[in-house]
Length: 91
Image (cartoon, helix red, strand yellow):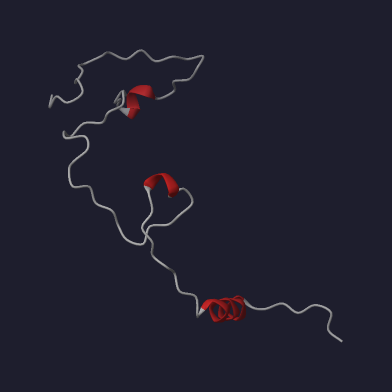
């Protein structure tokens, strides 16, 4: 009498695929507010660019990694501000 048998990965995969072979996913249209936990049936594409310009809508800083080498909370590195770009502006 065998008390424990273990499937190989291939056997387990075959059993799983056999168990779900007749499953059919249904597509339904729902409100965005009801979409939490759901999966898309197809890709979504916006009819317009958001934002309408090529800039991020968040604040941030760009630095050269080598300029921050060795920096830490107790060992600050001082950097110079070389410019800024306002949101929606090109440069």
